Amino acid sequence: MRKIALISEHASPLASVGSTDCGGQNIYVAHLAKQLGSRGYQVDVFTRRDKALLPEVAAFAPNVRVIHVPAGPPVQVPKEQLLPYMADFGDFLVNFIRRDPLGYDVLHANFFMSGLAALHARHALGIPLVMTFHALGKVRRLHQGSTDGFPDERFEIEDTLVRESDCVVAECPQDLEDLVNLYGADPERVQTVPCGFDAAEFSPVARDVARRALGWPQDGFRVLQLGRLVPRKGIDNVIRAIGCLRRDAGVEATLYVVGGNAEQPSVQATPEIGRLQDVAEAEGVADRVVFVGRRGRDTLRLFYSAADVFVTTPWYEPFGITPVEAMACGAPVVGADVGGIRSTVVDGVTGYLVPPHAPAALAARLALLAADPAHASQLGEAGRMRAHAHFTWSGVARQMEAVYASVCASVCAVAPVAVQAGVRRVAA
Image 1 (cartoon, rainbow, N blue to C red):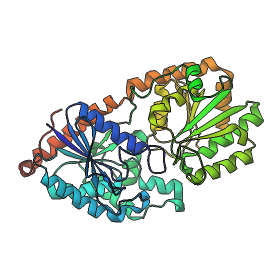
Image 2 (image 1 turned 180 degrees about the vertical axis):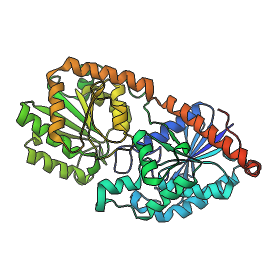
Image 3 (image 1 turned 120 degrees about the vertical axis):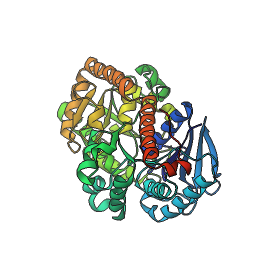
Image 4 (image 1 turned 135 degrees about the vertical axis):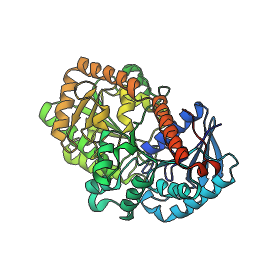
C-alpha cells in the first residue's frame, strides 16, 4: 500500500481544538489524514509528545496512525518555544523511517518547524517533501510586531524551505501572493489547495431546534464568534461592533463567543477572556456578550445553525476554516477582507467582507442582516452551496493526491538512486 508521512510538530490530530495552540492546523491534519486513509493510503502523522504517558504509536483512523515524537520535555510547551527541539524531532523522524521496511512515498510537512525536521529527512533519505506553512512568519511579524513570540530564525528557515521543498502548497490566492512576493517562491513550484469541511460534521440544523438544544432564547438577533481566543482573531472588534449596533442602530444583538482553554469560561484558564470582558464593559455591552467556553466539534454545527450570522474579523488569516464550516451549516458569514477569508466568502453573495479593524463597518452589515432575515437566509443558502462545491475535505484530499503524485514522479525521474533507497512512485 502507498504510504505518506504527515509531519505536524505542535498540532496533533488528537488534541482538543479551540485552546491556545490548537486550531486550524490540527483540523487540517486530522481530516486530510482520515481522507487519505479512506482512499487506501497508509498515513503516519508525526507530532511531538506533549504528555509523558502517550504511546509512541497510536491508532487514529482506518489506515492512520499518530506517532508521538520525543522532542523536548513531554509536557505542553508554547509553539513559540519549540524550535530548539526540532533537531531531535528530525533525528527521530529519520531513524523511524529507516526502521520501516516499506518506507514512505512522500513527506508532507505542516508549519515551518515541521518543515525543518522534514527537510533533514529529505536530505538524509531522498524522500520528496511537500510543504504547507499554514502561516508565514513575515506576514505574522508584519501584523503582530513586537508581540510576535517566534524567533527571527524563522524567516531564514522559511526561505530555505521555499527554495528546497519539492512543492509548496498555498492555501489561498493571498498565500500564493505572499510566498511569491515575500519569499521569492517560483510560482511553478507552488500549488494552491484550500482547506475544507467534513459534511458528516457540518450541515444545517433547523434554527429553532438548534437554539432549543443550546438553551438559547428563540427570539433575538444572535451573533456567533467561534475559534481560538487570541488577540489576532479580532474578537474585540466584534464586541465593539455589538456596541455600535446598540448605539447607532438600536439593535440589541447578543454575541456568543465559543472557544478557550477550558469548557467552563474563566480568566484563569483563558486570560484573553479578561481583556475581552473589559472591552465589553467599556462598550456598554457586557450584558450582551456571552463567553461559552470550549466545545467539542460534535456540537459546533448547533452553534453555527443557531446563529443569525457568523462573524470573524481577524487581523490576518492564512485560510480560516471556521467561515467554511459556518457556510456548510447555512449561516451567512461576515468576515474580514483578509487572507483566505476573501477567497471563501463572496461579498454580497454568501455574506459580506469588511475591513479587519472597523467595528462601524461590521455593525452596518450586521444591522442590514438583522433588518432583513430573508436576505440573510439567501446568503446562508448560497454559502452552503459554495462550501459543498469547493471546500470538502474529500476534494482537498483528491487535490493533495495529485500534488503527491507530481512531486514523486519528478523526484523519481531525476533521482533513480533515491528510488532504490525506498522512494516509490505514488499513482494518482
